[in-house]
Length: 331
Image: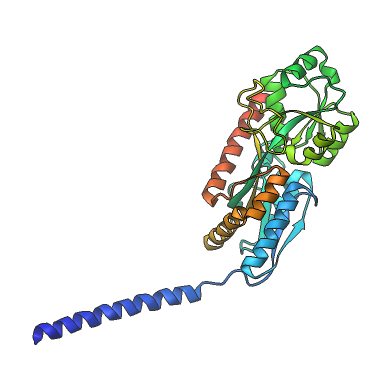
């Protein structure tokens, strides 16, 4: 009898413990603030119409549908993305301000002491959305069909082959690494604030060479108004399969890709960061998203916050090394 009563007591105690655990878990779940409960703005620190803007609008539409609140894009362009990034770094970390950025977020501070944000301390990485290569472009009047042929022409008459590139960021560092450090070509760099003026200048023949992301250059390659000599990705791009990589062109250690990813202000709660990371992974995994990204020349990624943080650190380390080795003057 005593044994039976003892068994009943143990079961009752276990039941109480279980009920307490369920009650505690329910209370914790109910006390967590729901997200989102109002509209969320997604800052794009570049003008409308570019690849970052297009991807941001696709993502915002999907997040609106899946999370039940409006995610809307706001373009805050200026200074190669610095203006928008500075604004987001100072925004409240409540999950209601996000930013779709390129790896210029990590690289630009290596090139200017005037930049007020810290790419590691001021932002919470959420997910890498996609990657795409850049390309060395030439005007059709340039006879070179390969990088090696171009190098021969440029060595014979370097003053003729000034090249157009971005004024800040990865584009600048990649061209300095390629033309100055690797090929030792004394070419004059003509800086531009964005892809559109680089393409316009090169198509018009004002600069016979341009270095810019492959996706915005793709229509000009199809028209024949520009020619691509090489792409900077590890593999050939599906939107320009006939264009060799830098490695195939005999140029080692020249791989660089435009990375586009989602970040938030640093104080954003980890629960919101993880929620958004899962949502972005689902967004990138959708067949319609992959089709759109492939049409633009982007490779879908959908990485974790930790993977994006590692990418940012790698970009900072690489940019600092190129700035030092190339003797680039920090403004």
